[in-house]
Image (cartoon, rainbow, N blue to C red; front, top):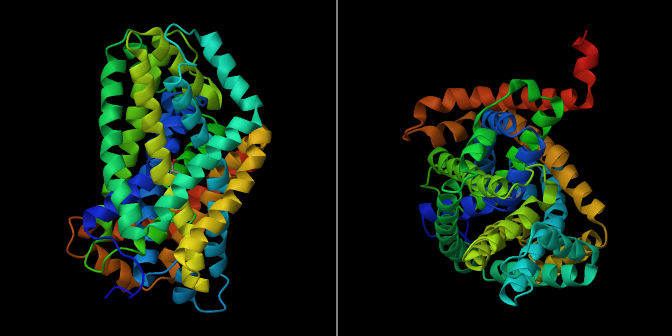
Length: 444
Ligand code: PHE
């Protein structure tokens, strides 16, 4: 039975679209390419894929399971499973907190997309604009809080609007519309990119791994990117899992979501890097990569305005289907725990995130700091605890039943080993490695 009065997805595919919508976001299209660019290209991609398989998939299954088993928000889920006075509830609190942190800077970056869309439509970006001109326009935007705040506000309004409409009429409906549209636009851009002269060097950059470039920083960045991109470690997947119907099975759905997210990140790389290389730009463009190199490249090519429009619409859709899942974590918490009406919760805390984001518009450094904090520390730490909980505290039969009768039944044992040992140990090692402690203990 599903809990009365709480929303639930209309169908199995409803959960998959929504969860994939949450996972596929700025993380895939804005963050993945520049992280790969900054961290050695192919070697980053390789470590990233390893993280997805060993950490992402098992933690995804664990997190959705905690939600589905309790049909509750992150705090309520840990309370239901561990007891009213258990410190495990803190993991849920940490997730709600992380949602505030992520949503506040995420919406500012999404606001940049809106600003670029606006500039493309109103002709501020004109065919023939060079890299210098686009860079100047982007840097001007970063230096002026007003337009950033305005577009961040518009984006937050869209997010609040969808969350207020509820699980089926808001989240499920919009994900089912925006996600397929996003995939079509992306495929067109990849097709375009690979036929450009930069297609071949881009493939090399993404696929030919050079192990000598492997550093502790690359590994930490790849792990952070994996959890961020899959929306793991802070209760978003737990909350979406809580709207699953009893009869739907988790492993199959989780595998779909992970596959879509990873596929789309790689495709984004294949769309972005060919263009970067064709127009002679450096892949190490940092957070500005897709906001400088791409528009400049688009404006150099025939019909580029249309391609630029397509790209920024794509980015906007991706961001929106993720931001609603962030606000949903916060909303579900206040609706479940304090019986607050959905409308009040979504509006009030949307406003709080808006105000937090305003700080980012005044200081790019603050945005970077929040981004690093969540992806390299908050999310992996959350994922570590979720995995320990699912491996050691959760009733064994819950997981066994989820695996039974699916294609993945035989993988139940492997999953258990992952959440009990592999994930926690790996996350800890990567943490230690990044602090340099491992090298001190075992180094020459
Ligand atoms: N996964 C989203 C992205 O890739 C970001 C996100 C993180 C959304 C955590 C929800 C929770 O952009």
